[in-house]
Length: 308
Length: 331
Image (cartoon, rainbow over all chains, first blue to last red; front, side, top):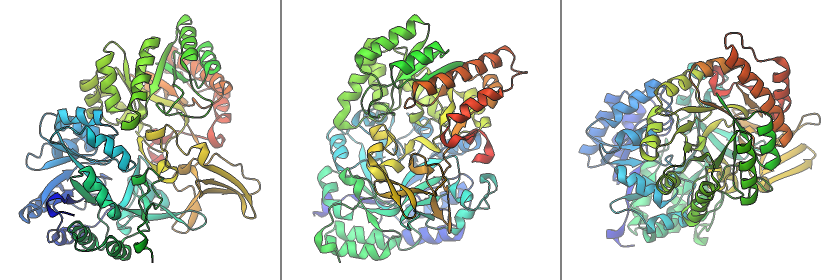
């Protein structure tokens, strides 16, 4: 793999509820990693207020000073008037680029400043991409349920100047609800959840009745219990002209994961060695099915050398 | 308030019209609509007959083309829009931005509604679709509390339609990929959730088991009624407890909220269930027609009547109903 063709690495927003100190420590470590772009902000639940917007801005400045491109991410499910107000403020921050995770944010940013769309904005075809490019879209994240084939079609007609980002590592954000499942698991009402999410830095595991890890409850968000890992598919990314690869934070070893992707992108280790390394540090079993048009939880096309 | 009823086939459409639906919504026989089930939906000939029947009886017909067009199949969505326009339908119910853009450009006089699958939960999102595609109505996802519905309705640039009755999605519509995670097919990509082709029932020593692509969704004791394995309504383990971790099998029923919805200026009430039988459509349309008429006549005196509530109960999932997200404690 040629260095010049290597896509940049991004770190997605922290999807879980971590405390203030954890977040500051985490981003201090991230500043020293090879990651190029950092998405910052609370995207899941407006009740999570360990950091105020001034704190996020401070982190944004620190990361920018460390040479990172910083993007501020909006909430994904925007319902209450207060949430709309916060989103307005974020979209009008005037300093940093914004990742819109709700169409309301897309509307606020349209024609005002260039923006990024996150994985929960439904861009399933190039005509959609064209419309959004006309409103100021500069980068989009492929919806996680789409794979190689769908992306190839879209890339063929991608509007000029629009970059493509793919979610390549992390538990997959699969669904959003008005209901808080973490509070429900504790038999607490959502409005008095006692911030139970703080107890689950990688989400709360939900298993089937035959003890198979199935999904992860993260407040109003539901994630895959398995960790999407497209490290073995990086050649596809290069062939398709993907510009940015997104790694989604987990509570431990995120720096190692970033480093492994960076090494692999620059040919410093084999796919097999990189997969073995990731296996020791990821939160759940590996999956990559969506990329191959299969069920998302499936594991497809594993290079033989990576098998134990 | 307009009563919008589901029709999965021509007999259901006629039943809905005969029993007082102001509008019926239908889909074509492919993955361009969110009830893409075998044996369901309308080909061109039946669409034509249905539209004629509805129009002769003073009812409207909306066509749902509300899945997300994937690049490789784009022409199917384009053809569905053109076919519906050619048939003279009263509105299209769309979700995909690309499809909306095509429809608005090609058929500027055709009325467009934003589908619930478009996931617009706030006025800013609705404004986007209004500014870009001149939508005339929005269908709200079933995730807002009554107070939030009121705020959105007050600020929305277009009239609002809400769900009144039927199977309940606990996740935001258009933003749930659980089904494709397990089966490869989702409402967005394929027009079905927990598709029947992936379902397997098995009698085992531990009880009757339902599986979705081999994932155990539920297991039933001897006297427990079994339900279709919609994956968010199965029983799972969280923190050592087994139960409905996401949602029970239950249906939404907002009959009790009609006066409030009317006072908010809600334009239309939608009934879920294109996959259900004409008998379901008849029962539900009758109850809702009577309730809407009674509420319209005298909202102050309106109370949902018990025979009506009972009738709805019997056709509900798990024979139980909920106010869902409208009622804050449910959340």
